[in-house]
Length: 300
Image 1 (tube, rainbow, N blue to C red):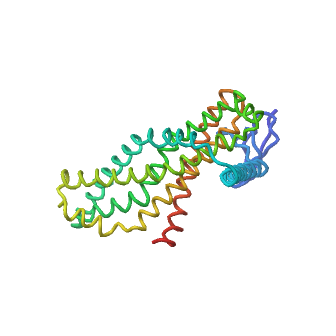
Image 2: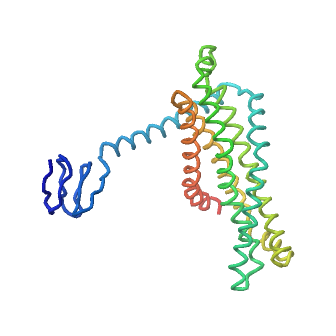
Image 3: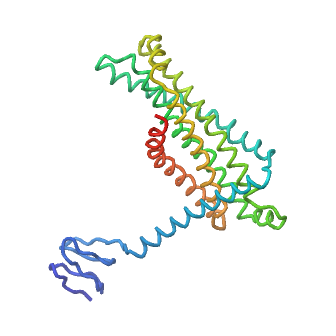
């Protein structure tokens, strides 16, 4: 059964939906305009509102998890043995990835800055741009993204597997709260390790940029160091370390939440791990902008 729409096109099949002008709404299904047949997506206010409600509910659940972790730290002694084990897994084993990332970023930033500054005869100012950028922006952000990819995925997969295999339920039957035994040590370990790893990434990046600028690009070494010391303030270092601490706590909270609430089955664990990495990475990138504005006003 076919029909004629208001613009002269032919409706395909028995679809009751009609074209309502150039900017009209299509309720979904197959429709045609002229001789070309397309598919209109079904978008409704109910679905948008449902996704918004799910996002707000997830945000509230993460905040509730943070509150439970803070109460656990206030009223109970954390498991220091588990904390040390997690600190080794999070911090020591992540050094190679973070240091490599910092060195590569410092070298690339030095080369690109030199190529642009050389046009206006500001070669010696290259070191200042690299040091300030690495200390306050690139260092904490890239270290946070590397920790998300390496540590965050591991946390979500580990806790998700424990949930699927009912190990978390076994902890509850033994009168052990999962937040006390699983979340708090990981949260503390990431919060402590993130600024330390960021400091290593920043120092490695500045040193690598010095080698590239002085040995490869021919910048005078004394001027390079002088500009780094002159324009890199203590507030730049403080901003980077504060960001790194907040990023570490954010990674731990999001990834632990996704692991504790993952669906059943192996597919659920994989989906929870992917969602944890994506959510933590996006949170770091978005929050970095607002933290830059806030911390610059407070410390700059």
